[in-house]
Image (cartoon, helix red, strand yellow):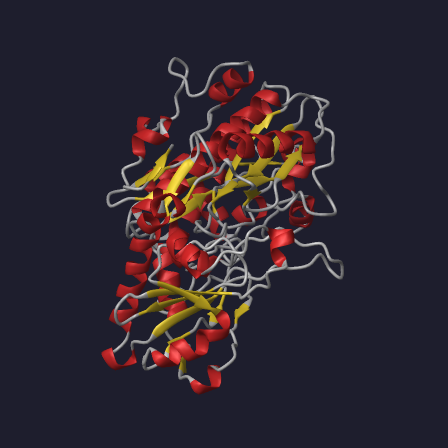
Length: 514
């Protein structure tokens, strides 16, 4: 009974996760980092505040609750209003739950007590939030470790949470943020299995969009294929970020799909589309981008652009290994894209001179990729002891400047765009204009752009992509014509065949497709 309660599971065909098997190694990893960072007399109790339900502005409607990332990372709690504690001295785990009135049961279902949540989340004890400060004081720990720092992707300050009775405790905020972020950078085997699941599901959904995409459809209709597939086939209620379903010139808008441009254009015959979508399961998400012609056939111009980006994509993944600099891989992507555009007659001059002149940033203004896991832009890209952000055009958008390390999962998403905001001024710029063949670029200005994105694990000796979608021109055209994916005969994408079956890569007890 307790074992069943401890599992997260969305039904047949979805990933069954034993929370004890999943979060136990995560907790141990955080404890080891904290113990290594702190002298024995400073090892206290980690305390994390979970999320609260948020209203829709001033109404009594509620935004669908998604748990705060750090609390989910350590404990996997679904419900709002919880706190979590982990004793650095002995590993003892505890949750503190809100004390709800019995009347809530009319609206929310049975109000469960501490023993229920103790079994569900496989912790040592559960008590009520109004008893929390007294119990923390009684534990006799030298201090309470709280989060405090800055999220380097959003720029948001993570403030230590306040709680009743905190003034009677010794609070320490210098250690936890750094150590738990670094733990999140290096995925456990269980996390990798979960990321494999959301990539497998997201990849299948992208293929469904390829095969369902037709001229005359609306962009949001393609988005709906993805959303329906990942929820109905894999139990993914949420996406990790706003879906981007961009066609034609909209593909040059990096975060298309926002409230002012809600994937509401009609996809026309001859358009190239750029679809950036990922699904979320147990708070971990994939982030996959595919580009293809809406009518199923690449024009020579579309193929030229696509193959330049594909060359960058493949070259970066092939070069990934522990110790390799992420900015160096960003430069490699620029080199391949610039080389492809030059070979097609859109650029002229020496490739290395163009890289030095920041020509790459005119066509790929974003970073090569980002760490990914519980958050789409996962933590740990910058921090104490790691390289600072490079303040050069094109490079300043990099979400990390670190060297790769085994256990990281990072997106590889080179792109090439024809964005008038960047290119029109460049045509008149003395530094850039000498490299740009304006008359050759002009016909591409309505094409939008191409981005190709995989989620890649850094292994001890190299890397492995968790994403498995058609990538070459030949593969995409075959799949859009109705071929099953994955297939053998015309397939020319290098891929580890274990990717074809989730069950074939699951080797973590308690975590499997059921």
